[in-house]
Image (cartoon, rainbow, N blue to C red; front, side, top):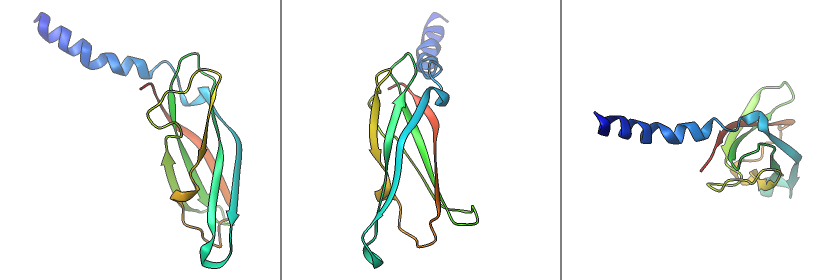
Length: 120
């Protein structure tokens, strides 16, 4: 029975680490969508900084939605700007997720949000 309790506590211990920070503890700063090039060679740069305002080191997953002029989402991608590295409290991780998107001429607006937080 003691072994079962110990095993269960070790299983759920990592879950407790996830509760220390929330998506609202992170901020997106200086997000800049830029289309470079022309014709079929247009390349997107969707860059910015992910700032950790939490008291603990953690990483965050962001989502970028691209919308047309009517506000309809035409593309959406997610990514972890710092990968599996925790961002120290009060610091930022630079990102550019533009390569994950394919340019479309009807791209009109972009929404960036923090959707998940994890301590690695």
